[in-house]
Length: 268
Image (cartoon, rainbow, N blue to C red; front, top):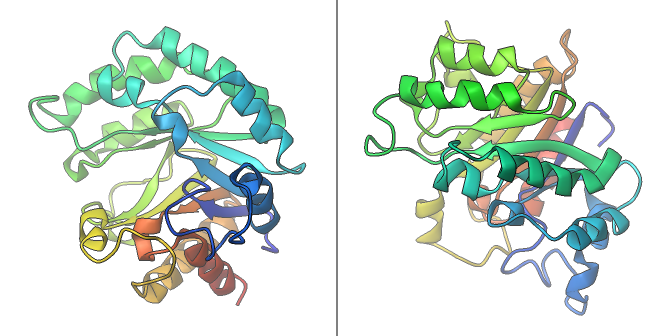
């Protein structure tokens, strides 16, 4: 893309169906990341959600990508789902120590929370009571983004807590959360000096049609045009905010094609 203020990539750099549709059919999997980095300048790594990677793995990511490439990494679910922010400082510190091996290629770290039912948290206020002290110990020299999937928890207190610590509220296009243009007008969802966007889609819905992510099967042109309009105002307008945006296969059927379509719309 011509605009250095925005980086667009996919959520993970491997998926069922990408060999032959995105990667050459005879390519060795160990060469996937290097090839990916010739097409896009950022990636959201999904595997770190499942476990803290080995330091040798992180070093490999660094070595396989060119100067200027940026990694966004999901914080392990051990912290966000299993421990739900309680007694997890050592885990978080070790995760950060490990991924710091990426050096200048380390981009935002995403805290992705699930939809918490009332058995987990009675209310957004209860969640906030754990979130606030957690945010206060995060290192200020790292970028963090945070995603929740409870639209009833979107409150001024919640956004102010993120804003106080310069944590980006993840702007998502997903089946049961409001998109930026659907937010209540009295809520300011811009909470940091950068933007973090995730095109997630309706996972359950699309998986009734396919589980092989080799082509676009849902036309998201109108939605992506709206995203271009919104993000251009923020990324290229007076705020000039740096933006990271990532396309999931569940959004339209094929993450790389969604990225390419967005780039075409952006550069129109």
